[in-house]
Length: 308
Image 1 (cartoon, rainbow, N blue to C red):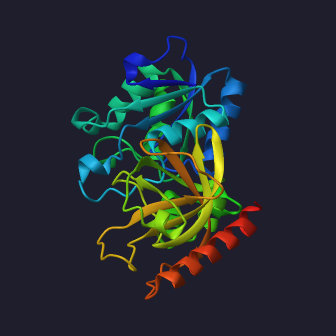
Image 2 (cartoon, rainbow, N blue to C red; image 1 turned 180 degrees about the vertical axis):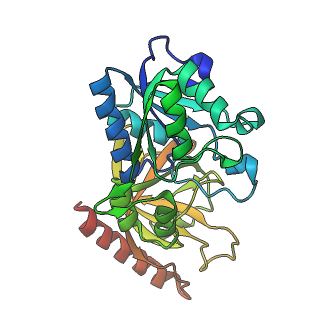
């Protein structure tokens, strides 16, 4: 898949194309179905399947502080789209110039001039252009004059509407199993492994502490089973998202991963942690031995759930 960062980076043979436009955070089952329709129409119309997205959530510029936390990094989104068969991902810089384009100018500059779109697939709530003035009806009217057709697609998965907003809610509530069903894969965070207090090592359960970007959503504070991904491989893991109440009084959660049957040094490495099962809420223990016993039970349960 060609990742084009701006219109000037597009491959010369991108035209004609079949396109979709959106943020697509999560690239969830609804997005996957929509992009599947893009691929189907691209084959029928002999066009290049293209996804148009942005380098940030538009609300970061329009209403700073009101943008939602992200489910997937731009790299994760590109990875998911490539696995579906999308051939070109166009990432537009969402700045004041793009923000103030009218719906007509956006269509002309991006869809017509740059991409030569012959068919556009969008969700029924799609809005575009300055102050979200453009609707699917606007797009359909422009298509009649500019020579492209428009298909309105319902973002449905397993007979129910799937949305990034609902998935964020599931993750925030710790329902990682449900989130995985709606995403079509486990929810995964990525970050650098940094040095921590090394209390886990003293307890017999050394952990990799992840430095997670601030914009990333975290699951509800608690203990989870999952997988750590590193250098193309995955390893069974118990993950704590929490405040370490037994030892300290933190105000922001940290992510600690105890990788089962693993003794490699991960400091400074970038790893991914997949959340597959919620094991329990985080608890404060008065006795360190009780904490060690609880972690031992977490490990036993994780082995059962992960089949290792």
